[in-house]
Every structure is written in C-alpha cells, then in structure tokens.
Amino acid sequence: MNAVRKNKDSEDRLAYSELLAATAPTDAAFFQSATETLARKLLGCVLLHHRTAGTIVETEAYLGTADLAAHASRGRTPRTQVIFGPPGRAYVYFIYGMYECLNVVAEPEGQAGCVLIRALDPLTGIAEMRQRRRWTGRVEGLANGPGKLTQALAIGREQYGARLDRGALSIRLWKETPQFEVDAGPRIGIRECVDWPLRFTWRGHPALSRRA
DNA sequence: CAATAGATCATCT
DNA sequence: GATGATCTATTGC
Image (cartoon, rainbow, N blue to C red; front, side, top):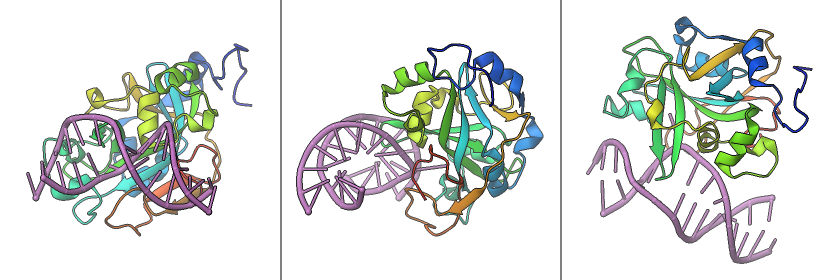
C-alpha cells in the first residue's frame, strides 16, 4: 500500500524519488535523547546511503561508564571519541577483521551513548544491495545483521563522524508513521551486562537478525 | 534443524 | 599477543 511499483523488474518496495517524497529529514534535536530512548525512536526510520535504503527494524543501546559491554565504558580513545561528541553522528567501527558496524551517537555532547543498527528491511536499491552482498536468497536476509547492512549500503569507516540528519548517509522519518509493537530483550554477541534488556525489535518482523 | 570452525585485522593490554 | 557489538560454510543429528 506504500507505493506503486514502477518497474516490474525491480524488487524495490519504493523508487528512490518516492522514498524521498514519503519521508522527511531528521533534525539535530531528534538525536539528542537518552540512548535507550533513541534506540526505540530509530525503529521504523529509514536509513539511506546514496540511493540504497532500508527501514530500521532492530537496534541496541550502548551506554556509558557503567555499561561494560559498551566501547565507551573504557573511556575516550581515538576510536571512541565520536561517542562522546554531539549526537546524530555516525560511529562506525571495524570488527572481526572483516565487518563494519554502524552506530548512531545519542545523548548531549560530553555524554557517552550510541545505538547500534542491527537490521534493516530493504526498501530501495535492492539490486545494488544484492550485488554488494552477493546475496541471491530471500530479501529479508539481505540486511538482517549489523555486518550485513553496512555491506549492503556500502557503509564503512569513511563515514566515521558523519552527521546523519543530512548528507549522503542519513536517517529519515516517514510522513505516515508505521504502526508496530516493540520488544525489548538482551543484546546479542556480548559478554558483559548480558541481561540488560537493551535490544529493541519491531515485533514479529521477518528481517530481524534473530527470531524471538 | 543446531553447533562449530574459520576467516582476518584494528584495537587495546 | 588476545580479543571481538560477525558471518558463512560445513558438519552432524
């Protein structure tokens, strides 16, 4: 119901121009929230890089000093400095010698906190995303993981510190807000603070990185 | 299905 | 020198 599919050969749910028309940019104030609040607010938003995009369906909050699972808990380093800076910037880090993960910086400047984007529902530019990932399976499996979505949208450390309310890499809001329930549960792949319920998911969505 | 091995390197000890 | 906010392929039931 979201839009008319213009090109029968495309899997895209929305053409790029339609996506721009159906969404609006975020502003700097949108990101200046408590980290957990921002993690919930980002669900259902659009992550766009150039002409490829998806809807965010899974996030995790990473807090400050007390959260030993968070990179920022060890303090400021060249890698983590952006987490302590102004909100709405990209914290991109390299992991396991192979993958990049994208976070959105939260909290007022001077306070640490960021939100890991863990899964996207692909919307636009799906053919290009498939090529980047060399993926021929179901579309729900194209960007349903933090390392998969950065590869699908070609996001890397070049975007470290980029602002996300404008520019090639940006987060946008639907003019007609989608309706869904949110589940909270333990974060994935960590060894500290394993019971803190800081993973947020769009309930029942097929593109989650793991099923409930 | 579930469990596990292997890939591969920036970061911090 | 060990580890990690991961993913894929493969093995085994």
